[in-house]
Amino acid sequence: MAVGSGALRDRVRFDARTPDANGDPLGPFAPGFTVWAEIEYLRGSEAALAHRLERRQPVSVTIRDSAQARTVNPAMRMVNVRTGEEFNVTAASPARDAGYRNVLAVAGGATG
Image (tube, rainbow, N blue to C red):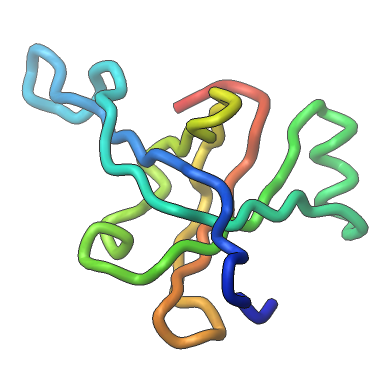
């Protein structure tokens, strides 16, 4: 997916867990950083169809690469700022286009 001018039209926030009483990162989520993104709802693959049957919606999200973006990991959650929809981050990696990162996430199911 080539990212074009103006393609990053969604706002997403990445939240991380706070430390619990023992100091482990298992407490409630705390609001993190917000970036412009392009959210693409996935469909068509067998795995994506299976998730949809379970009322889970996989998405591919493209964000600009930055020091903050490189901290995104599966222990975080992503929130669509406009709709409030929450996503569990499943993977994050460099995108095909230089200067961008790709985040895979799933909406629905248990959060966290």
